[in-house]
Length: 235
Image 1: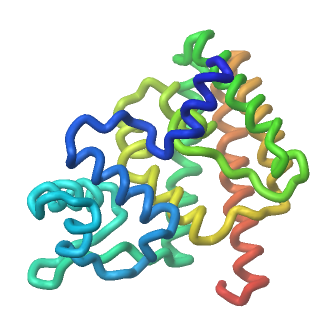
Image 2: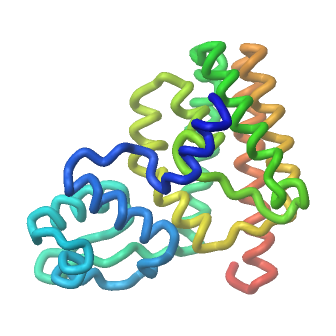
Image 3: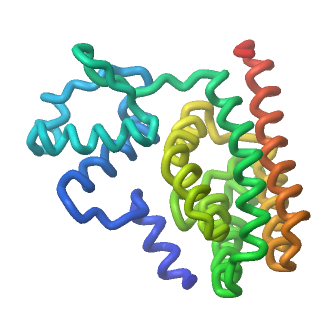
């Protein structure tokens, strides 16, 4: 992956190229929810959103249906739609699921990723390593999609069921939780080093080691979050 293509992805807040109006609205609202511009737990007003995005109610409802499938909103008959709440229990449950499924994805990636995919992933890590926040060890925030190390590894598993779950159903919910609970972490530099070790295992085609390193990496992130929440009196 060239630096030009990486920068192009950085400048684009959504991964996919919107095809229809519903696609575009879905991506815009999805981004707004994940980044907190639409607050967690807030009630969704269809008339207001339709006016804001200048679309019909039917187009908006199509987008909301897709957001529900991504677990970013929940809808009740005769009540309406509401953005999901980010709870501590929900966060920890997601990390346990990620530990198991991304470990599996990593093992499969070691066998399935092409040499070009591995080279592209190294380019992504190089870009991450050049980030001032990572170098200073204060934060490790990754852009979504192809600029996200975990996303690339999951795609590299070439297992469509894992991709559907981790890059579809759960992906943006995970990112929402990351934004909600903050990015600053004493693990920023450590997490980057762990990514490098995972990539080395994948490049060596050592699936067993790659899976173990990924599981340890996600478990360490979960422990870090638990410690942070305990200090804040939230756990």
